[in-house]
Length: 184
Image 1: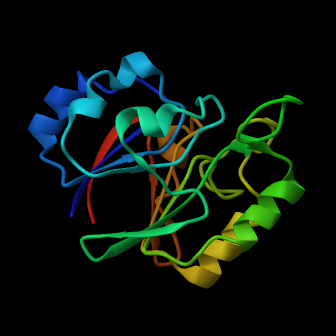
Image 2 (image 1 turned 90 degrees about the vertical axis):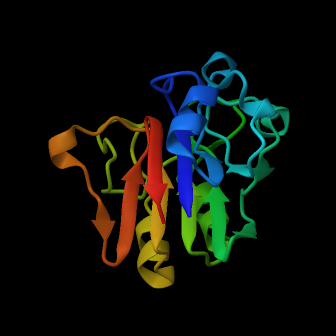
Image 3 (image 1 turned 30 degrees about the vertical axis):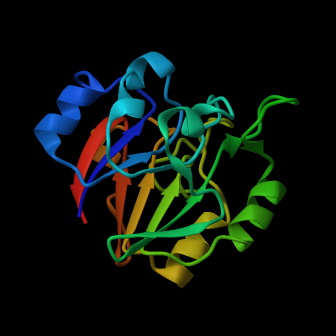
């Protein structure tokens, strides 16, 4: 299955052109997408799945016709997907921001799936540990090692390309910024 994943930055061209060029069977939203960046996505007649990033409005997924993956398991074309919204908390009243304890409780509820979609990566994986906002979730590495999803898609951080982690054991890790096309 070919997936077009979008997160955290404008794609390299308008969404309709990107879909036409990449020919995906599924679109996955990995969070923090400005409405202008995904203009026209609602009209794209493909299945869409997604999670919220820490800057997304609660209406974002519905507005483009995407099914919410947060703490759910959804199957498409024989592949199962699950997801986790948000980032580490740095505001008091923000949606989709969690303390480490809140994130740990959410991670404990994640169902097993072939593809994990999370805005924030696991701690130590493409994160910025000295930045309280862009560090990874401390309890997520153990979940990935135990559940062994085939793929983990995340956004939120800006790792330098020479430090990019692309595997956790058998799990392929894809950092999404702008757009990524994957054959899974």
